[in-house]
Structure formats: structure tokens, C-alpha cells
Image 1 (cartoon, rainbow, N blue to C red):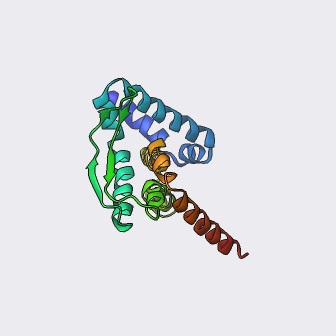
Image 2 (image 1 turned 180 degrees about the horizontal axis):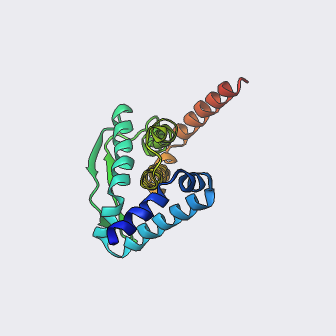
Image 3 (image 1 turned 45 degrees about the horizontal axis):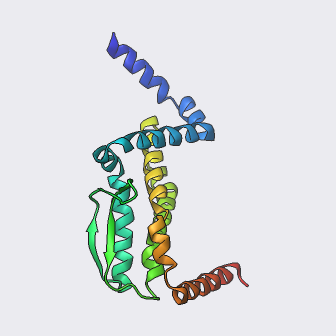
Amino acid sequence: MVYEVYWRIAGIINSPQFLQSVFDNRFYLIVLVIVLTRFKYATYNSMWMCSLVNVPGTILHESMHFLVGLVMNAHPCNFTILPRRSMEGGYVMGSVGFRNITFYNAFPAAMAPLLLLPLGYYVNEYLLPLLPATLLNYVLYVLLQTIIIENAVPSSADVRVATSSFPGLLLYAVLIGALVLSLLGL
């Protein structure tokens, strides 16, 4: 009896008509993202539940700092994804320390998580079409994209480090401006 009900519901949920209506309706996508976000924030009462939910994104975020810091000669050290309480009472999910922050590497090392955005684009454009169209795959896709995009946003500490050197900020503003102008063909 329960088995039959399960298969009947699974058949409805994975029917092409139902899936097409879910995939094409942005309202359902927004609801799903909000539900996932609420679930994430509900874990913030416990440091260990919070860290368990945030570990995949923390690994991505801190790895980007580490790799760009390594390439830019910032000498990364103290890589950690273990959560700890901050002085303000919140949680610090992870961190990477640097021994050689200078004007030329502060901005890229601090803004490195932004490089996760092309990964999210790749998942959307090239990985999603390879997956069979099922509701479970859609939920996993939205979860993965939420983790990638949310952790691509630099933290307030990242912004402080990125803006700590005016010459470096000016250097990268000119470089980014020149790149944008060249992409626009101007």
C-alpha cells in the first residue's frame, strides 16, 4: 500500500509535464532558494550544525583565497575550515592567513572568491544539461548553485583586506577598467 502510493507520487513528480512546469516557473525556484536559506539559518543556533551545513561552501571560499594567494605570492598560511566564535559573538566558518600581503596582491587574494562565479556559470551551462530531468536533480542543482554563488561573495573581512592598500586598489581599478573598455571595443 505505502509502496504503491510512493510510486504513484514519484510518477507524478517525475512526469515531464510536472517537471517542465517546475523548471519553467521562476516562482518555484525562488521558493526553493528561500526554503534552503531558511534551513541554513535555522542551524545558526548550534555552531556544529552551522559548520556542517556551511562546510562545502567554506571549503570553496577559503580554497579560492588560498590558491590565488599562492599564485600572487601572498604566502598563505593558517588555512582552516573549523568554525570558531568571533569577538562579536558570531561565527567565523574558516579563514586563510597571509604572511606577505602587499599592494599588488591584497586585492586579488581578498576578492578571490569571486572566481567561483565562473564555476557557477559552468555548472549552469554545461553540467545541468547532462543531468536527467528529475525533481531531485533540480533540487540538487539549486542547492549547488546556492552554495557556489553565496560563497562567491567576499566577506566584510575580505573587503577590508582588498581596500587596505590605496595603490593596489588604484592599480586594479585601472586594470579592470581597461579590461571592461577592451571588452566593449572602446
